[in-house]
Length: 354
Image (cartoon, rainbow, N blue to C red):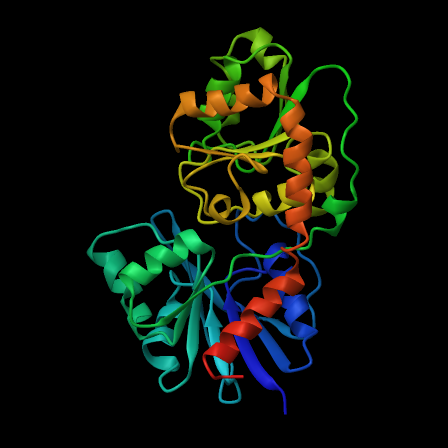
């Protein structure tokens, strides 16, 4: 008889779904995936048909300040599940399951690094002390969870997404001396876009900047820049996941200067695209995917001069870009959804559940 695993996740994210498909193909498992919501009001992802093992739970949502709190009822019968994995903390459903619904049942919390908070945050995260295990999204998060919640077993299981289309896209054969820096994400200060624009403004004229993502704060951030600098910036708008490989393929260097980023799947995609990667030291994916001087550089978050220095280094030593890009593409072969599924299998076996 196969081992049944039930995942609870907030939304049908295309990147998590890549992992779930890989898990669904494992002969030793029977997978069930439950989503708390079909989509979010600001979701950038178009709805896609669900697979047989996926279900959108009935329910709704409450808005508490800027936060969205899903609730679901009735909940599925979990009596046949050997382990339950929760990828949600800030929802009524996850809070009920952790505190009452999973008593006597092995359960694992799977999450990105949590920001430190006050009494309310401590109350909401308190059930993690009773988890069977915490599967952290990356080693940066794992160290933090281990310090704050020492009782459960701990594993690092980052996001693994399909990179085939990125791997297949050819690298640009550029002979014009230009270097195209690329940012993909929301155009907001938390992602460090203001820092990126400030650093870019100081670079030589052979530097160009390509931006892809939801517009958000971009017009206000671009407004102070001189016209000559804005002329070297191309904004391509939001792009659906299937279109992203062709934009990554137009770039020479990927930049993610976030002030805070729990993981950052775009770093996985930059690996697959064979790009050198510049990212701040507060990007979770940077700790696991970026090796300083091998396939990119990490710099101090919030430090515009450190970011400028990293970008200038790419302009001054273009011979590094091919070597760093080749190292990224080689490393990408280790970050497939199948590799992510294998990490889950290994964790359940170490816990004695499988």
